[in-house]
Length: 340
Ligand SMILES: [Zn+2]
Image (cartoon, rainbow, N blue to C red; front, top):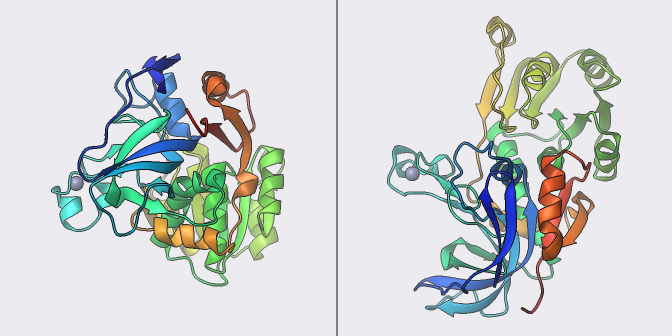
């Protein structure tokens, strides 16, 4: 089978490797679609602090079950599934308290262990979730959707609250969609016009082009100067964290999703004065079934996010383009052959 290897930072090759075999309790999967995430780009660039090489990227995928080694009540050969890609050790203090998304020794596919950018993968059965009547291209978006949904659960977003999302990339847009399922009114900010257009299509109450407008003007226009009840930071940029503090109402919740390497300087009084709840949000926990149900019932539509689909043979170029910042695409999916 063919497998996409980042051999060393900046070098990616499609290589022929031996087919994997499922161990007891695992399924053999034929990958259908796999999304390129910022963390895959970091692995490619060599800026992902946890990656070792060579590494197969990819943790967002849909796949078909080819074989089950063992028995399963829920799953059968031919099912179309996606899978939870964060492997926890089950023994650390986080895991013992049920906070498995924040496992101290978490291993995410595509970063700490090989991922889904290959024609065939194996996965433990308990990590797989079947979907019926969901486009496999949308199913590959469940994992990033779960990141946004988890962040919304962290903030316990409530009906009628005014929410601002900073960053209209895939995670920001999916956070917006998730907050809307809770009945919130969601504004979203970015500096790329095409992403803001997508946000409007996806139901944003308003969009903010931070290349043209200030945070203060948005607070005035959207909340009459009150500030937002919840602000999600989905860029990882220091200036965006400061913008989030500025946009937040007194007593607001501020959720950090964007993962960055740059340091931020602030006067901590800004957090005290507004009595802000600042929440980190990492991975997701136990929400795949909920999200697949939303897709199966057509409650949400994530299809506008997948702005480009490339065949396996063009995956190398797609990773290079993403690493070079040469694209405004929201979500690029790699399509794998239906039959190898
Ligand atoms: Zn753990």
